[in-house]
Picture 1 (cartoon, rainbow, N blue to C red):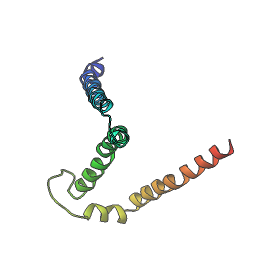
Picture 2 (cartoon, rainbow, N blue to C red; picture 1 turned 45 degrees about the horizontal axis):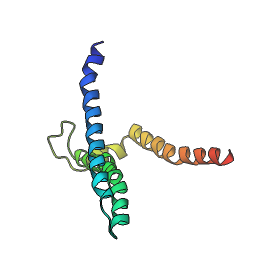
Picture 3 (tube, rainbow, N blue to C red; picture 1 turned 30 degrees about the horizontal axis):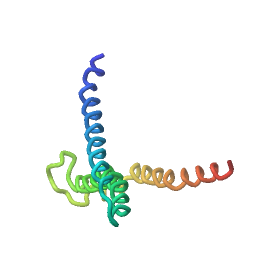
Picture 4 (tube, helix red, strand yellow; picture 1 turned 90 degrees about the vertical axis):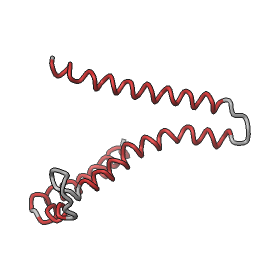
Length: 120
C-alpha cells in the first residue's frame, strides 16, 4: 500500500503535465482557427507537426545528448574521464557479447517481424 501512496504524487504530476499540454494545444488551435489568410495552410501544418516534433526532441534527442555527455564522466558523474568508458566497453569480453546481442536484435527482430507481417 505504501508503494501506491508514494506513486500517487507522480501520477498526479503526469496528469497535470498532460492537462497543461492539452490546454496549450487548445489555445493554439483556437487562435489558428481565427487566421484567414494565405498563411492558413502552412500555419496548420506547423500547428499539427510542431507538438510532435517538440515531444520527439524532448523525449529522444535531449536524453541522447545527456547520455552521451554523462558517459564521459566516472560512475559518480563528478570526474571527467573522456573515452575511458568506451575503451572498457569494447575491450571487456562480456560487454562485447552484450553489444553483439544488441546489434543482433536490432537487425534480426525487424527483419523477422517484417517477413512475418508481409506473409499475412
